[in-house]
Image (cartoon, rainbow over all chains, first blue to last red; front, side):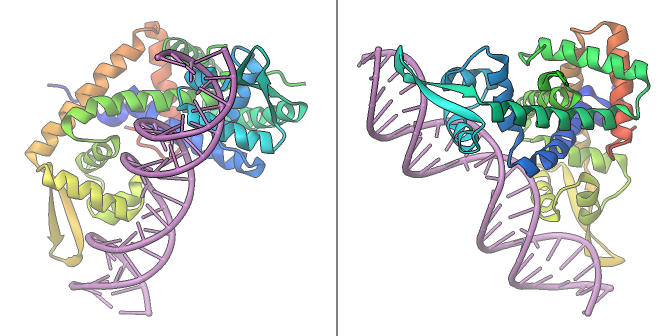
Length: 146
Length: 146
DNA sequence: TATTGTTATACTCTATAACTATA
DNA sequence: TATAGTTATAGAGTATAACAATA
């Protein structure tokens, strides 16, 4: 028979650690009036691969209506600019402002700090292999791999 | 300056992978009428470390009222038994039934299958180190480490 | 007609607060 | 008066569906 414990599976560990880490990250973003999805949207814009709201929704795997409200809030903070595409006036093209770029840098710094706290309990070799393995998993699961 | 990309941080990778994996696990549990938290509760009971609803809530880091509804549904499925502690009739003691044990085994098997799919894109060495690193992270973040 | 974005609405998950019973 | 559990209510986050503008 199979005596593997649920709690020792990758599924359980990735699921619970992901939730814990996201919550800690979210707590740090709160000071900037942002949620993780806002920062995800900023990162999409910085990557430059897409700009229309519908394309962003597909890339982020969220509903188009969610992109509307995320963009609304980011625009209000001056982090993104919304402009109609002159070639197709149905499309709203979002671009990062200088402020948005700065905001993304600040949030990335917060993530890097949290990374350091996490990696602190790992040996350098473990930390390196963790990064390698997570990159491979991201690549094969439709997540950003850069 | 710092040119680390948000998407390459542990925070981002653990957060997004955790959400993706949880969703895939959840989809497989649906056939059994369960959500990940139900299975988490079954795993707590199997571990035998606690049994009263309040202790379970603390261990799972959820509100006591959530344990009530999780236990309600599991009891209705015949997976757990609720009995008043004769020494303190305020306490509800939850125990796994044979059916509950079987259900947990089935769900664990689903997790193990998903694990295999995930690990399929890793070298054996990477997979081993991933497990080691996640165990260390779990241990230092108040998550089950057995 | 089809597509992009928006608005209105509803659903899922979970917490907080009020309540009951036991101690 | 304090604690375990329950019920009632509310909030966050997000999706679905109806709608408006443009193609």
